[in-house]
Image 1 (spheres, rainbow, N blue to C red):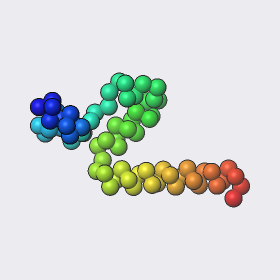
Image 2: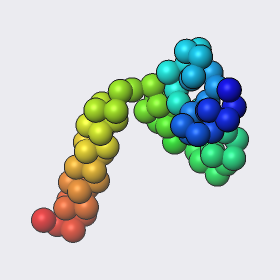
Image 3: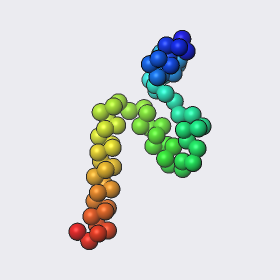
Length: 73
């Protein structure tokens, strides 16, 4: 089971249907992150890929708007 999970880069829980999260975050993954950053990652993991893409696009747009405002444009 572990070999198959490693082959597909997913958790064994994902393979047997206990979770829909392919790769849960590990303590190594989150070291140095704030609580808000960890919460965002955990929530993103629960969304379908298209929703994740939409949220990334929205965040990029908001960052662009902020930069435009700061530069006086």
